[in-house]
Length: 393
Image 1: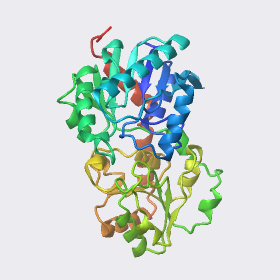
Image 2: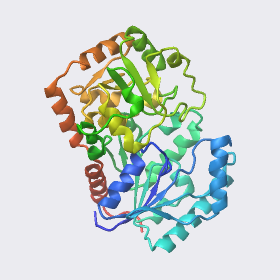
Image 3: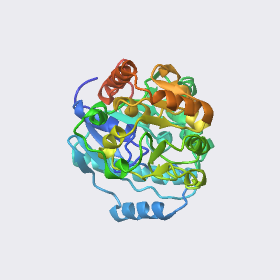
């Protein structure tokens, strides 16, 4: 695709969220490829509850009214549009859509940006923006958002179907999402998740010191990085593994209840060899991975996780860690570098096997991780879009 595109990227995660996901990494890779990116913070998809976090977020945006874009990296500006947290309805969408369109128009005017490409992660985009107003449009579908707790599933599915019909192309990260979007889209392709290889390969540096809060935990350490939430993590399985092997230390890095405020961690709290360290800055994660022997993905199998490709999978591999996971469909093609185990007994057995050093397997993990960089995947997504005759103007 032509260099120097102006890209409006509608995210479903705020730029400043401590755990980066596809959205922030893709924005960075697009900027590094020579494009200019207006990163639009999450517009909010759940029905309003106005809990403490929601109230704080709304107040920050109300103070800004029509906020000005702020530069965060070379070629990337972030804007946080106000969206009124009102009960769902057509007039609410029209009002929020008007505010969003005005905010983006003012930002483009200030920055001198064109409407070259709309790159969206938000399945409700078509209900808020005129997709056809952009020269090209892409929906990067990375989650079955409608199946997350607290979401208005029917409304999101309806809006997502409309979006798939309208955009020039859809890119999905898993076969389940591909099956969901392909019948609706003009063009649809599958590109799995990627990884910030150079960042996570720091874990292989002998000079990198271990964090103090990790170093005091007995080895071997089995590490999980991510959201500690009932709908995503099989806590009962993890607790059963911990009870079977009190000599293993299971270390959890991440916020409790992320995406699922009703999360209860009683099963984990009852196990003295499960250590919850809380969230840690992205920049420090390689040091924690360095101190681990195995990377864990104890996903609960449900409609959401069957469509999920866990980002931590390639991050673990890039750090050189063997990986043990529950049987997620997205990971089945990678059976040579991940042990898939459905229950506590087989999960524990797979961990025991992973604790045995295997230099050939370690080399294969690093080779695979090196082939799935964000930069290469962004190039492939742009090439996919370029292969379609020019859409709307």
